Amino acid sequence: MPVKVLVIDDDSAITELLGLLLKSHGFEVTTANGGEEGIHRFKDEQPDVIILDLMMPGVDGQEVCRRIRASSNVPIIILSALNSPDTIAKALDAGADDYLIKPVPSSVLIAHIKALVRRTGRLRGDAVAERMMTR
Image 1 (cartoon, rainbow, N blue to C red):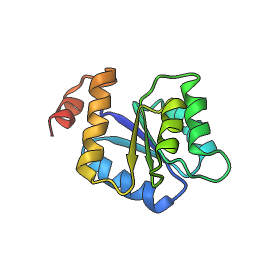
Image 2: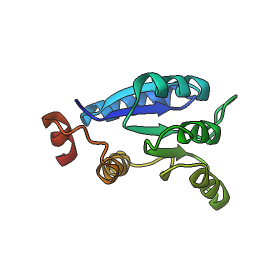
Image 3: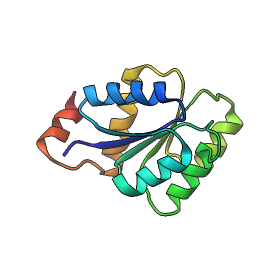
Image 4: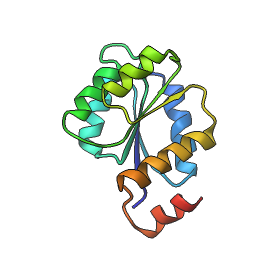
């Protein structure tokens, strides 16, 4: 099976765009358009990697990160427009594994996902996933 990625962002245009991009690189993608929905999708889908926005109404990205981290070591990449060192430090302290600033080149995002998958051993080990890793 391909690597499963959960994208959590309150902007449906972002989740749709990231979904198309990631699918074109061989990933299986699930999206959620809010923090609470993202937590539910995480529990239901058991993704290999999460891409998470910080600025969301209701349950924000840092809270989503803390809640997921309380029960899982799944790699979490923060993808946010916020570019202050304090915000980045807080996100990493909340349990994020990586922090990328929007807009990020698609090749950089894909490379970060692949690096986290390799480093954490979350690759499922089949031929499709292996092809995805060598693209």
